[in-house]
Each structure stands twice: as C-alpha cells, then as structure tokens.
Length: 486
Image (cartoon, rainbow, N blue to C red; front, side, top):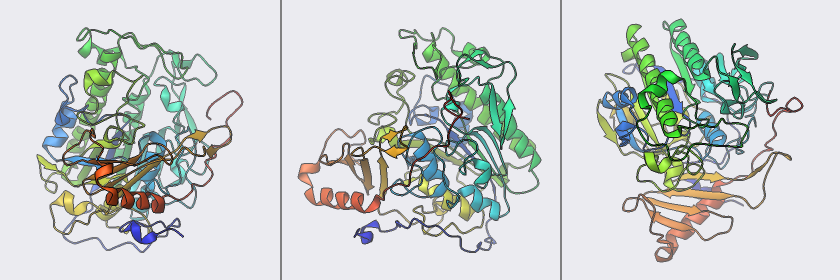
C-alpha cells in the first residue's frame, strides 16, 4: 500500500470532480486571462533573465511592468506531458498524458483549466500547439473546454512552420501557398504563409470578439522550437551579426536545413517577442490593460545538443543541462505575470511553484473553485502581494520512454525528480542511486551531497515511490496510411 501521508499538500486521487463555483470576491475583479507559452524557450533566452545577444524588448517590458519569477518549473522536461500537467493541475505522477509522442489524448473524464473557466462564464480560446490529442480523439481542445481552437493538434504536425493546413476546431484550415515535400506535409517546399503569423492573427481576432466579456486566451506558441525557419523580414535584424560555424543540416524529415541557425533562432524569438507586443497593444487599444492578467512562460527548458546553439546563447543561464533532463535546465522556466494595478510592477519573486499550480491560480482569479483532487496550489496571494500563500511540501516530476508501436510506456525507463525545500533529488535511471543537490548554494547542481545526507535521500525516495501511479494506456488515434498525424 502506498504511503499517502508522504504526499502532504498533494493528493494521489485519480478521479476529479467539480465543487460549486465560488462567489466572486468583492475586492477583486475577475480579469481576462492571457496565457502565452513559448516552445523550448530556455531560462536564459530572455533579456530580463540575462540574455545579451537576442533582443526581447516586449517580453522584457512585461517583466518591467509586472512580476518576474525566478523559481518556477514546468510540469515535465518534455512537451506533451508538461502540457498535460498544465491543463489538468495533476503532477507527473498521475497526469493522464505521460508519453511525449504526437497525439496521445487526454480523456473525457479529465478536467482542464479551460473547462473550469468556461463554467465560470469565460470565453475560452486556444491558439498554437495543443499536443494533447490529435484530430478525432477525445483529447482535442474543442472537446476539452475551449470554445475555439486554432493551430496544430498533433505535436509532430507542429514541427513544420509552413504546413499545408492547420486545424480550426474540427475542420482543416488551408494555408494557401504552402506545400509539403513528403507524405506528412511536414517541411514546406513552397513557403507562402508562416503558420505562427496566422495563429497570432486568430488569437488577436478572438480577443477583439470577446472584449466585452471575460475571456481566457491561451497561446501555446510553436516558436522558437526547431525547425529553424522564419520569414526574411525577421532574419534581417540578425543577418551577418554573428559567424555561423555550424550550419544546421538534418536528415530528419520534420525539419529543413538552415545555413544560418544562430540568426534564425534569434529571429524566431524576436518575432515571438514582437507578437507579444501586439497582444499588449491590442489590450491597450481596447481599454483592457487593467482588466487583463498576462502570463508568459515556456513549456520546458531550452534545447541542448542538436538544438539552436545553446552554449552560444547561454540558453538556460546558470542551470545545468537542457530539455529532456531532470536537472534544473530541463525543468526551470521563465515566468512573468503582468496585471497593472494588481501585480507589483518591476517586482522579482522567488516563490517556488510549477505548472500544476496554473489551474487553481486561474480558477481563483476567475472566482471559480478548482476540481477536487488536483495537486496544484493557487499562487494568487503571491501575485497580489497578499498574506496566506500556501507552499508545496515538495514538487514531483517523472519521465519515461514511450513505444509508439505498442502505445505503452517502456518498462524500466522511469526517471524521477523531487524538490523538497531547497533540496533536489534526482534518479536519472531506474533503480539508480539518488543524486542530491542543495539548490540554495548550488543552483547549477555540481555537487552531489547524497552520501552526506542519507536521511534526506530516504525521504525523497519515499516521496518518489508514493507519488508515482502507473499511467493509463498511452494510445494515439490511428493516422491515415503513410502519415504521422491526421
């Protein structure tokens, strides 16, 4: 029997039910919510987090006008499971999607943050990369609480920035002028429409349509994830700025070769930065700035080897390792929150929280109760500078290999991590000895202190055993013959 007492503020309940909506607090208006999440943006990629080579003035402005967090963590070290944690408020020990494939769906029974906000009277829209169920599955966004979704359902589809089509709810939305060179239409030979631009256009239109009622606009951007492609009007800013000693050449059909990878990556991030500015400017135009809270973050750490030159750009700042790792560089992400008149401008906050906390946080902002049995804790007191902020006893992550042929998690592939106060325990291989780091003194995780603290190692090992529940089948919907997605 699992030692549930070790879970503290967490719960290992796998069923989730709603309680009644809470009354809206009289002292706090219900804001519109814009949640922007970059793809594979590292902790050190933004100017406000120490970046010196890439220009991100609009996102830096969010930090100057809001709160910049230093100890926020993704739900996982890779894409799809992280989004599952974000949407459901359930940590990796029992969130429904734990395979980082293309289209494993969340289930009808799972309750998403969009469902919580929709029941609270919010218009709900998602624009970008979903990654929690391909078209035709129960996991698609428009069956999981979103009134409207525009973009990519399957994350393999999202590997191309010039696809022949995107999805608008349950219908294909053609992108004229784009054509694929293989059966999946992944890499465009003809580049007519940059998908990111159309996605942002649709997000801006959603905000305009719903300016007179509360709305939740979720923007899981596809950039700056590799493939390294961006229109020339963005490349001009960085053309010839740095030497390009290692052109990006790939045999992976999901990506195109890129002779100027440093310039392309910087240009992609600057293009995303520009679009963040457009969202802020639209809110100002509509008189919604003080009525809207904006969050900006990344889905996991920046890419390492094979990615966009992480050492040159110091992708994860002082943190060890990259995306896919249980070290800080794979898990810790930038997080900025801006709400004029409510969130203190220019503030820096060191509260430790992670993606499981997003659902209860947005629910409280909306005057709603989150589902029972989730793992997250609202950080609204921290955002608003009020007393009473509850803290996690621990944070938990895990990751496993996935066999796409069988739809099963590979046996003996589980890796785990726990943060317990300032301590971080990592098991990098099944049954391997735990590594132990003191993040207060050793943020780059260079000194393994496990031998000196056997009692902490034992406690963290017990947490890992208690927090993990075997996952449900990770089955993707059947794709058309010769294709990876629908």
